[in-house]
Length: 315
Image 1 (cartoon, rainbow, N blue to C red):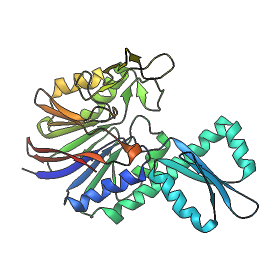
Image 2 (image 1 turned 120 degrees about the horizontal axis):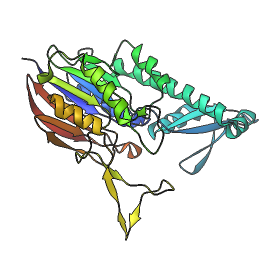
Image 3 (image 1 turned 45 degrees about the vertical axis):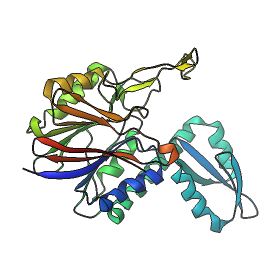
Image 4 (image 1 turned 135 degrees about the vertical axis):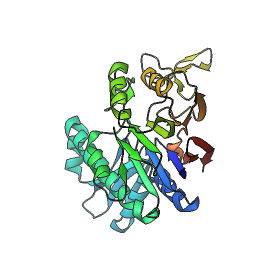
């Protein structure tokens, strides 16, 4: 039997602070593996506009900055640490990006890919060679980042594949979610998602030791509870009470109930950390507080057909 200890995390959303903490876990806890299930990329560009006097204007979290060239690297690092993407530009280009949504989106995608490549290069620096690093995207991640993960020799790209955790345990990965109010890049109907999941798990050799790393959690599992939104996409509050409901996938639940793998690794719903058993399958969601720079994960130890440890890790 193969005994393996790993940490699972998800929903980093561009926070370099959380990414570095995730990688640091490898040495800190003497892990055999790190497993990440998207969403990796950030959502906000910070323009750093060059002036005629060789200084730069920028704004971060509502605070304006005037920067020298020497101060740029540290400021850009601060942006990445809080999930923002810094971009040095000039006044004319900044005006174009502000008015042209198509060009702005192309720039955003280019910067996301560059950030992911940079993050991948941190893996061999932070994680020992004997620690496997398994990464699949999430529903919010654009397809453009996949090659940056797939092509890097220090990581194992898992999306829509089954990859080895060790000599006995396999990890089946799927980034896709059921439909959301936000029209994310990797979402689809429950029927389509069911087909994708069946195609992935058809590659599994042994279901008794299999691990499903599906970004979206199973429907009505308590680890899929999210705020309900009104017609203006704001959290729905009635009589002073935030209204919540299940936002997970019925297809994921159906697949777990049908095949009963050893473990289910999920994310997607930041507000619902925890674990629940569906039949013999233990399903976990570490949740996410990426905006505060807080790392949230689960330390997991599997031994043959058994889960020996499920421990929340936060910091």
